[in-house]
Amino acid sequence: MGVLRSLRQLWVQVLIGTVLGALVGWLWPEFGAALKPLGDAFIKLVKMAIAPVIFCTVAAGIARMSDLKAFGRLGLRTLVYFEVVSTFALVIGLVVGTVLHPGAGFNIDPATLDPKIGAGYAAKAAHGQGLVDYLMNLIPDTFVGAFAGGDLLQVLLIAILTGFACTGLGAFGDRAAGVLEAIAKLFFGIIGVIVRLAPLGAFGAMAFTIGKFGLGSLVNLGAVVGVFFAASTLFVLIVLGAIARVCGFSILKFLAYIRDELLIVLGASSSEAALPLIMAKLERLGAGKTTVGLVIPTGYSFNLDGTNIYMTLATLFLAQATNTPLSLGQEATLLGVAMLTSKGASGVAGAGFITLAATLAVIPDLPIAALGLLVGVDRFMSAGRALTNFVGNGVGTLVIARWEGDLDREKLTAELDRGPGDEVALLDSVEAG
Image (cartoon, helix red, strand yellow):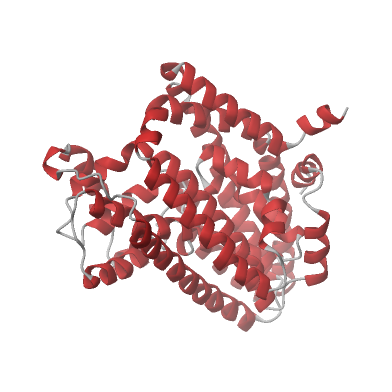
């Protein structure tokens, strides 16, 4: 009975799916690579329901707020926190890369690399926008356009506008907020059904990764992958751990509490895959619904700690592997540009590689063709980026909620001490809204 009960736990199912996917990709590479649609379909199903959940949650939350100045303060504090922590992430990537030298000894001549690979990603990065264009892109062409495109910042913008409108409509605004809350329950129910497919999605994603790139690519470039995961672990345990401790909770207990979501993110290599579940868990930990609804989607564009670590560390790796020395001035430029290029990077697998191409463009001494060195292992590093981004946004939400006085600290302590509990019950509660 104990084994059967364990098999009902989502994290166990996802772990089994991931292991089986790795075995299939290793033993039957072509078949494993062909299973990519399973992972992609799961991510698309989750993304399909994310935008309505964010819109309804944020709009209804603002509509219920009695002090709109508090909302403005919440937004400002969120952005300040994100910028400070993101800077720590960039610096850690730079320091770890400088100390451990993961690219030392490769001695690769850039002339021997295929320029087409790097040029392809550079071309995608070239389509990036300037600051004015980026800000203009936050405004959707139509109200429903934000939902059709799945841009979380656009959805957040119209949710804020809708919430403000409701606050000025008196009794009608209250009724509209009630309708939004009811719709949110419906979409949480949809997500509760979709998330049960996470083991299948993890199976397909891992089978594709191993089947497409093979374990050989991971062995050959194991140093940079290992250093990246070490830097990310250092950031989570030391930086986020210290922040969590100051705010009154243990980072280790928090990681244990979100183990299911971490495995989903690992299997799918996408932090968006578990976004609705982490929102439900953060509320269960005592964070206010409005704070969760604002901080989480904003963090997916402005608090990409794992992506920041990756960009500085990967740039140093490529420079070391091609024997391209970087001056202190170039490293400082790298920090500044990486802070900008990381903004708006999606939680979907592979986006960090494109932002890396955009970052490399400011260091002309480093050939863009060097990107080809990381193609074979980027999928593995993408999982690390997604995990770190995910944890960073979860911790950030609790910190900002406490900063705002919107965190039930007794409930937080009790829940973390109790542990994640029965995840089947959590899924049932999500489906019930």
